[in-house]
Image (cartoon, rainbow, N blue to C red; front, side):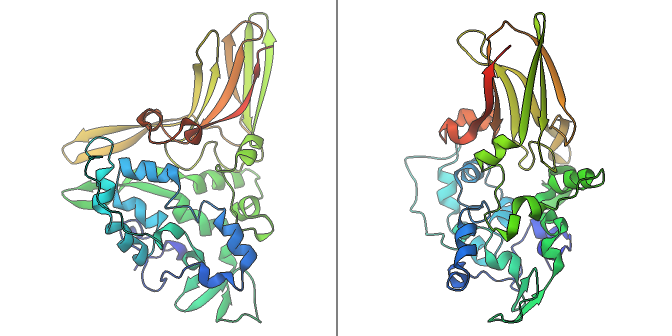
Length: 340
């Protein structure tokens, strides 16, 4: 039976909802006793895992049921979403019809995304990071909640492909954040995922959705040598690659020599789709993501005072061209200036 949350890396965790050992319980059931934590969670991407606009844009364009099992993993959530299959299909950018959109059923459970029960409930017991002898419900302490391994299976997983109507696990990783962190920790990195993303136990769990944190995670230095400007770009205080997570994310270095911005460099992962007799496969062909403690150098010949900027793209160029979302929800500027 499935349990990505119990570190039993089984195939089912990507192709079926969580078992009824981990039933959906609304975070509202927890609020009266855990008001501050609930408020923090509401600001997190865990709470918005299903309904945040970036994910919804991607799911409507590629309505793969595999996506549901991480973004709304409980059986009750899955059933809500499945009841709206025709609604999502009607919005598809190429095969949908805006003239015949059915009524959408409410998705109150799905709209809670990764909720309290997802991480803390198991067989009627509440799992806590520390002993809580005065708890109002059966509780057991589990130190794994404070380890990076607890985050692994939702943030480090392969692409799931199909052949003859069946799912199978490909050799191509879709997300590798845990492996990136592990490589960093093996070279001296000390923080766990929780120490960076849940300081003092905060359940806000800020990441790339927090622009202030994102801007602070990158440093750009420029030096001129005659006609050439050297850009040195490196991550700051990041224990994994930058960007990390969703396979479409990328960072661009751009200049504006005249009226339009021109991309000089792009850092991230590039995939391609390949057809062979067994079906359609997605394969990684390059990974230029910025590694921890590894500066990236880029030389270019540009005049003094040429405007430059570094931008973070939450989606692919195709996502930006679809026009589903305002461009400022897909692209943010991390740093900018003029060439020395």
